[in-house]
Amino acid sequence: MHLFMQAASPTFDSSHFPYAFTLVYIVGFIAAVTIGSIAWYNSKRPAGWESKERPDFVPKIDKEETPGLGEPKS
Image 1 (cartoon, rainbow, N blue to C red):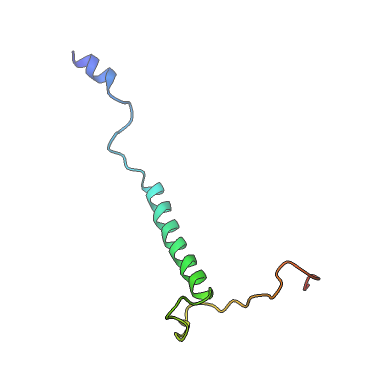
Image 2: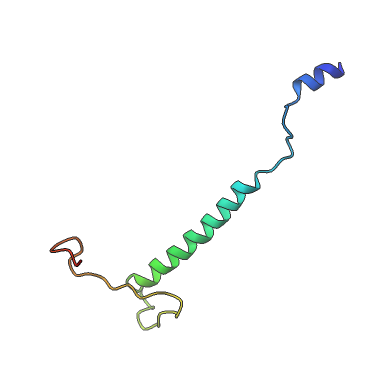
């Protein structure tokens, strides 16, 4: 009976947790929140936020009037 129990159990250690995948998810979440925050601060201000100042850590991104049209700038 013990032989059948060993044959039915998986051959890999079932308690092994994929730490690399968890690290990728955490780093990806932090990157998404950071990029999303920068995009939100650079977008048009929502109602009630028009007079607020931009935080120092958010870079200023200038918008083009006609993106993708005209001559290349190089």
